[in-house]
Amino acid sequence: MDKQEIIWVTGATGFLGSEICAHLQEAGYNVVGTGSELSVCEPERLEAFATEVMPTAIVNCAGIRRDATTLNTRIKAYEVNALGARNVALVANTVGAYLVQISSDDVYGAIVPEPVNEFDNPHPTTPYGKSKRAGEMMVRNTTDDHLIVRSSWLYHAQSGRFKDILDAAREGRTYAARTDQVASPTSVDAYCRFLASALDKRLTGTFHVANTGSTSRYGFAQRILELAGYDPAAVLVGEEDPKTAEHLVLESLLLEMAGVDIPAWDAELARYMEAQGLLA
Image 1 (cartoon, rainbow, N blue to C red):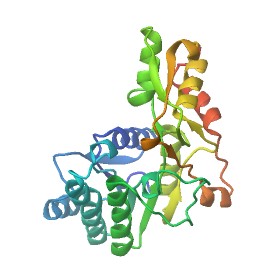
Image 2 (image 1 turned 120 degrees about the vertical axis):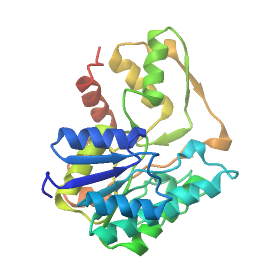
Image 3 (image 1 turned 135 degrees about the vertical axis):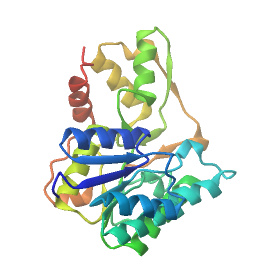
Protein backbone atom coordinates (compact mmCIF):
# COMPACT_ATOMS: atom_id res chain seq x y z
CA MET A 1 0.00 0.00 0.00
CA ASP A 2 1.01 3.62 -0.53
CA LYS A 3 2.75 4.84 2.62
CA GLN A 4 0.94 8.17 2.35
CA GLU A 5 -2.39 6.42 2.84
CA ILE A 6 -3.67 6.43 6.41
CA ILE A 7 -3.34 3.47 8.77
CA TRP A 8 -5.59 3.76 11.81
CA VAL A 9 -4.41 1.89 14.91
CA THR A 10 -6.96 1.34 17.69
CA GLY A 11 -5.69 0.66 21.21
CA ALA A 12 -2.67 2.75 20.28
CA THR A 13 -1.71 3.60 23.86
CA GLY A 14 -1.27 -0.03 24.95
CA PHE A 15 2.00 -1.98 24.86
CA LEU A 16 1.54 -3.52 21.42
CA GLY A 17 -0.45 -0.66 19.91
CA SER A 18 2.22 1.89 20.80
CA GLU A 19 4.97 -0.35 19.43
CA ILE A 20 3.07 -0.88 16.16
CA CYS A 21 2.51 2.87 15.78
CA ALA A 22 6.19 3.61 16.41
CA HIS A 23 7.44 0.92 14.00
CA LEU A 24 5.05 1.89 11.20
CA GLN A 25 5.84 5.59 11.59
CA GLU A 26 9.56 4.81 11.53
CA ALA A 27 8.96 2.85 8.33
CA GLY A 28 7.37 5.96 6.79
CA TYR A 29 3.69 5.13 7.10
CA ASN A 30 1.04 7.76 7.81
CA VAL A 31 -0.35 6.50 11.14
CA VAL A 32 -3.30 7.75 13.19
CA GLY A 33 -3.68 6.19 16.65
CA THR A 34 -6.62 6.24 19.05
CA GLY A 35 -6.86 4.97 22.61
CA SER A 36 -9.48 4.92 25.34
CA GLU A 37 -10.91 8.23 24.15
CA LEU A 38 -12.51 6.33 21.25
CA SER A 39 -13.93 3.04 22.51
CA VAL A 40 -14.47 0.19 20.06
CA CYS A 41 -17.73 -0.38 21.95
CA GLU A 42 -19.21 2.81 20.47
CA PRO A 43 -20.02 1.98 16.83
CA GLU A 44 -21.51 5.36 15.90
CA ARG A 45 -18.43 7.26 17.11
CA LEU A 46 -16.15 4.75 15.39
CA GLU A 47 -17.98 5.26 12.10
CA ALA A 48 -17.90 9.05 12.44
CA PHE A 49 -14.15 8.98 13.05
CA ALA A 50 -13.50 6.56 10.19
CA THR A 51 -15.52 8.58 7.67
CA GLU A 52 -13.59 11.68 8.71
CA VAL A 53 -10.14 10.08 8.53
CA MET A 54 -10.85 7.56 5.71
CA PRO A 55 -8.11 5.04 6.55
CA THR A 56 -6.92 2.57 3.95
CA ALA A 57 -6.14 0.05 6.70
CA ILE A 58 -7.17 -0.43 10.32
CA VAL A 59 -5.08 -2.32 12.86
CA ASN A 60 -7.32 -3.29 15.78
CA CYS A 61 -5.17 -3.56 18.91
CA ALA A 62 -7.98 -2.58 21.29
CA GLY A 63 -8.75 -5.24 23.84
CA ILE A 64 -9.12 -6.31 27.44
CA ARG A 65 -5.86 -7.95 28.52
CA ARG A 66 -5.45 -11.54 29.62
CA ASP A 67 -4.50 -10.59 33.19
CA ALA A 68 -7.62 -8.42 33.47
CA THR A 69 -10.02 -11.14 32.30
CA THR A 70 -11.65 -13.48 34.81
CA LEU A 71 -15.02 -15.17 35.14
CA ASN A 72 -16.20 -12.05 36.95
CA THR A 73 -15.03 -9.67 34.22
CA ARG A 74 -15.74 -11.82 31.17
CA ILE A 75 -18.76 -9.73 30.09
CA LYS A 76 -16.54 -6.69 29.59
CA ALA A 77 -13.97 -8.86 27.83
CA TYR A 78 -16.58 -10.08 25.36
CA GLU A 79 -17.87 -6.53 24.85
CA VAL A 80 -14.41 -5.29 23.87
CA ASN A 81 -12.60 -8.32 22.46
CA ALA A 82 -15.56 -9.76 20.52
CA LEU A 83 -18.28 -7.15 19.91
CA GLY A 84 -15.64 -4.42 19.68
CA ALA A 85 -13.84 -6.38 16.96
CA ARG A 86 -17.14 -6.70 15.08
CA ASN A 87 -17.72 -2.95 15.37
CA VAL A 88 -14.30 -2.22 13.90
CA ALA A 89 -14.94 -4.73 11.09
CA LEU A 90 -18.25 -3.04 10.25
CA VAL A 91 -16.51 0.32 10.09
CA ALA A 92 -13.81 -1.17 7.86
CA ASN A 93 -16.54 -2.30 5.48
CA THR A 94 -18.14 1.15 5.53
CA VAL A 95 -14.97 2.96 4.45
CA GLY A 96 -13.50 0.11 2.37
CA ALA A 97 -10.53 -0.42 4.66
CA TYR A 98 -8.36 -3.49 5.08
CA LEU A 99 -8.58 -4.81 8.66
CA VAL A 100 -5.81 -6.38 10.75
CA GLN A 101 -7.22 -8.03 13.86
CA ILE A 102 -4.70 -8.64 16.64
CA SER A 103 -5.35 -12.01 18.29
CA SER A 104 -3.50 -14.35 20.63
CA ASP A 105 -2.26 -17.88 21.18
CA ASP A 106 -4.83 -18.04 24.01
CA VAL A 107 -7.40 -19.17 21.43
CA TYR A 108 -5.81 -22.59 21.95
CA GLY A 109 -5.76 -24.56 25.19
CA ALA A 110 -3.14 -24.03 27.88
CA ILE A 111 -1.58 -27.48 27.44
CA VAL A 112 -1.03 -28.70 23.87
CA PRO A 113 1.73 -31.30 23.54
CA GLU A 114 2.58 -30.60 19.88
CA PRO A 115 3.17 -27.25 18.11
CA VAL A 116 -0.06 -25.74 16.76
CA ASN A 117 -0.31 -24.18 13.30
CA GLU A 118 -2.92 -22.15 11.46
CA PHE A 119 -4.76 -25.28 10.32
CA ASP A 120 -5.33 -26.59 13.85
CA ASN A 121 -8.74 -25.90 15.37
CA PRO A 122 -8.66 -23.56 18.38
CA HIS A 123 -10.16 -24.78 21.66
CA PRO A 124 -9.84 -21.93 24.17
CA THR A 125 -10.15 -22.86 27.83
CA THR A 126 -10.02 -19.44 29.52
CA PRO A 127 -12.47 -16.50 29.49
CA TYR A 128 -9.82 -14.38 27.78
CA GLY A 129 -9.08 -17.00 25.13
CA LYS A 130 -12.78 -17.50 24.47
CA SER A 131 -13.34 -13.75 24.04
CA LYS A 132 -10.41 -13.46 21.61
CA ARG A 133 -11.66 -16.46 19.64
CA ALA A 134 -15.11 -14.85 19.46
CA GLY A 135 -13.46 -11.69 18.14
CA GLU A 136 -11.76 -13.66 15.38
CA MET A 137 -15.07 -15.22 14.39
CA MET A 138 -16.82 -11.83 14.41
CA VAL A 139 -14.18 -10.43 12.05
CA ARG A 140 -14.35 -13.43 9.72
CA ASN A 141 -18.12 -13.23 9.54
CA THR A 142 -18.16 -9.48 8.92
CA THR A 143 -15.45 -8.67 6.38
CA ASP A 144 -13.53 -10.67 3.80
CA ASP A 145 -10.69 -8.14 3.55
CA HIS A 146 -8.99 -9.01 6.82
CA LEU A 147 -5.87 -10.45 8.39
CA ILE A 148 -5.91 -12.16 11.80
CA VAL A 149 -2.53 -12.36 13.56
CA ARG A 150 -1.78 -14.66 16.50
CA SER A 151 1.43 -14.59 18.46
CA SER A 152 2.84 -15.54 21.85
CA TRP A 153 5.07 -14.09 24.55
CA LEU A 154 5.67 -10.79 22.78
CA TYR A 155 8.42 -8.90 24.54
CA HIS A 156 10.24 -5.59 24.53
CA ALA A 157 12.81 -4.10 26.86
CA GLN A 158 10.81 -1.13 28.14
CA SER A 159 8.27 -2.95 30.31
CA GLY A 160 6.90 -6.28 31.46
CA ARG A 161 8.89 -9.37 32.45
CA PHE A 162 11.86 -8.43 30.29
CA LYS A 163 12.42 -5.18 32.17
CA ASP A 164 11.65 -6.81 35.54
CA ILE A 165 14.32 -9.49 34.96
CA LEU A 166 17.05 -6.98 34.16
CA ASP A 167 15.96 -4.63 36.95
CA ALA A 168 16.25 -7.47 39.46
CA ALA A 169 19.75 -8.31 38.25
CA ARG A 170 20.90 -4.67 38.36
CA GLU A 171 19.50 -4.21 41.87
CA GLY A 172 20.85 -7.48 43.25
CA ARG A 173 17.40 -9.01 43.78
CA THR A 174 16.12 -12.46 42.91
CA TYR A 175 13.47 -13.06 40.27
CA ALA A 176 10.96 -15.92 40.29
CA ALA A 177 10.46 -17.55 36.88
CA ARG A 178 8.20 -20.43 35.94
CA THR A 179 9.82 -23.64 34.77
CA ASP A 180 6.46 -25.17 33.76
CA GLN A 181 5.23 -22.50 31.33
CA VAL A 182 6.55 -23.08 27.81
CA ALA A 183 5.98 -21.13 24.58
CA SER A 184 7.75 -19.32 21.73
CA PRO A 185 9.15 -15.94 22.86
CA THR A 186 8.79 -13.42 20.04
CA SER A 187 10.32 -9.96 19.85
CA VAL A 188 8.02 -7.05 19.14
CA ASP A 189 10.49 -6.04 16.41
CA ALA A 190 10.00 -9.32 14.55
CA TYR A 191 6.24 -8.99 14.97
CA CYS A 192 6.15 -5.45 13.62
CA ARG A 193 8.38 -6.34 10.68
CA PHE A 194 5.82 -8.95 9.68
CA LEU A 195 2.96 -6.50 10.15
CA ALA A 196 4.58 -3.88 7.92
CA SER A 197 5.17 -6.52 5.24
CA ALA A 198 1.58 -7.77 5.58
CA LEU A 199 0.23 -4.25 5.12
CA ASP A 200 2.38 -3.77 2.00
CA LYS A 201 1.11 -7.02 0.50
CA ARG A 202 -2.40 -6.74 1.97
CA LEU A 203 -2.24 -10.33 3.17
CA THR A 204 -5.52 -11.95 4.13
CA GLY A 205 -6.35 -14.95 6.28
CA THR A 206 -4.99 -16.11 9.63
CA PHE A 207 -1.25 -16.12 10.37
CA HIS A 208 0.88 -17.17 13.31
CA VAL A 209 3.84 -14.88 13.95
CA ALA A 210 6.26 -16.47 16.39
CA ASN A 211 9.98 -17.13 16.46
CA THR A 212 10.87 -20.79 16.08
CA GLY A 213 11.67 -23.14 18.93
CA SER A 214 10.43 -22.87 22.49
CA THR A 215 11.57 -22.41 26.05
CA SER A 216 10.20 -21.98 29.54
CA ARG A 217 9.80 -18.66 31.32
CA TYR A 218 12.87 -19.70 33.31
CA GLY A 219 14.88 -20.54 30.18
CA PHE A 220 13.91 -17.22 28.59
CA ALA A 221 14.97 -15.25 31.67
CA GLN A 222 18.19 -17.26 31.89
CA ARG A 223 19.16 -16.37 28.33
CA ILE A 224 18.36 -12.67 28.84
CA LEU A 225 20.64 -12.58 31.86
CA GLU A 226 23.43 -14.47 30.12
CA LEU A 227 23.39 -12.09 27.16
CA ALA A 228 23.36 -9.09 29.50
CA GLY A 229 26.39 -10.40 31.39
CA TYR A 230 24.74 -11.53 34.63
CA ASP A 231 24.93 -14.87 36.41
CA PRO A 232 21.44 -16.42 36.11
CA ALA A 233 22.06 -18.66 39.12
CA ALA A 234 22.45 -15.58 41.32
CA VAL A 235 19.19 -14.04 40.13
CA LEU A 236 16.66 -16.70 39.16
CA VAL A 237 14.46 -18.79 41.40
CA GLY A 238 12.51 -21.52 39.62
CA GLU A 239 8.80 -21.89 40.35
CA GLU A 240 6.07 -24.25 39.19
CA ASP A 241 2.37 -24.74 39.83
CA PRO A 242 0.41 -27.55 38.14
CA LYS A 243 -2.77 -25.44 38.28
CA THR A 244 -1.35 -22.78 35.96
CA ALA A 245 1.19 -24.77 33.95
CA GLU A 246 1.24 -23.99 30.22
CA HIS A 247 2.72 -25.64 27.15
CA LEU A 248 1.67 -23.99 23.91
CA VAL A 249 4.08 -23.55 21.01
CA LEU A 250 2.89 -21.66 17.94
CA GLU A 251 4.15 -22.81 14.56
CA SER A 252 4.17 -20.14 11.82
CA LEU A 253 3.40 -22.70 9.14
CA LEU A 254 1.99 -20.31 6.52
CA LEU A 255 5.09 -18.12 6.72
CA GLU A 256 7.31 -21.19 6.40
CA MET A 257 5.29 -22.37 3.39
CA ALA A 258 5.83 -18.93 1.83
CA GLY A 259 9.59 -19.33 2.24
CA VAL A 260 9.95 -16.71 4.97
CA ASP A 261 13.09 -17.14 7.05
CA ILE A 262 11.90 -17.16 10.67
CA PRO A 263 14.70 -16.78 13.25
CA ALA A 264 14.95 -19.00 16.30
CA TRP A 265 13.80 -17.34 19.51
CA ASP A 266 17.29 -17.23 21.04
CA ALA A 267 18.90 -15.81 17.89
CA GLU A 268 16.22 -13.13 17.66
CA LEU A 269 16.65 -12.35 21.36
CA ALA A 270 20.37 -11.77 20.86
CA ARG A 271 19.73 -9.58 17.81
CA TYR A 272 17.07 -7.60 19.68
CA MET A 273 19.24 -7.05 22.75
CA GLU A 274 22.15 -5.92 20.59
CA ALA A 275 19.87 -3.41 18.85
CA GLN A 276 18.73 -2.17 22.27
CA GLY A 277 22.32 -1.83 23.53
CA LEU A 278 21.74 -4.49 26.19
CA LEU A 279 24.46 -7.02 25.35
CA ALA A 280 27.31 -7.42 27.82
